[in-house]
Length: 275
Ligand code: ATR
Figure 1 (cartoon, rainbow, N blue to C red):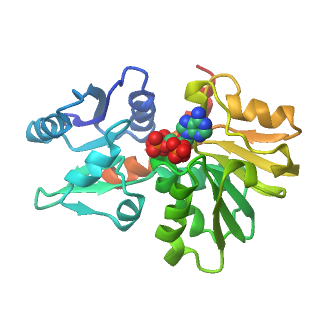
Figure 2 (cartoon, rainbow, N blue to C red):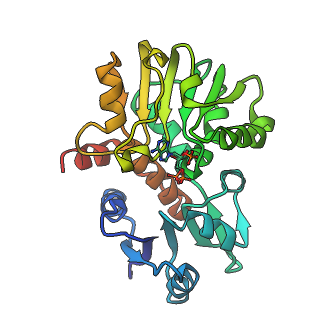
């Protein structure tokens, strides 16, 4: 049987771990697929994905900076992609219509709950940031029924807009917005979804957001401790995790969407951690 073709599209793309993750999934599950990385020109994402599917490609992951374009281009969106406003997974349905999905939020929740044993139900959660990455994960977090979810952001109006957007999915969760400096009280879980560290910055939250048992999760990952997690450790946090597990879990969910087969994630996370 010839291998079916999958790829991740972004710009830049050479640093992407997705080809390695999916190759590990494929060999683990014996699925006959090949997974490559494609750098789309900044002004031709549309042509790049059209060409990929025309030559028989089966599925795409989409990364920075094309997730919103992928969402816009699709003819159909899954409910979780619809709310996320961005897509990281594309495929063609039986009628050859382009379908957009988003597996980022599920990836984050699975990493927290299954890999780190942090059940979100009843927790007081603080999310830092209100950009595309945060919007992509709010639905799946709210579905776990935390006691409260506070969105803090440099531009408070963007956090307030997310509160309005997700109000209908909050159920009994107390959903609110504030600026970083206004984040008050200790939280059970603090999730950093800002890109501040890319500019060598930290979101200026008070250290009082950290209590003795606060779990800290940085959606970024790095081989060393991330900038935000180092700040948290310096201020007493002992349970800090980075986004490597989320990366592998979102990939596993995409793999499942495409192939109907669930790969095991733990050995892949271990292998990447030891690279
Ligand atoms: P992404 O797709 O990574 O979410 P984005 O949509 O540009 O990218 O969002 C980046 C997030 O990081 C935003 O919440 C942004 O704050 P603003 O909404 O005020 O722009 C936040 N961010 C980026 N740089 C930051 C910095 N130096 N300090 C604090 N927050 C920062």
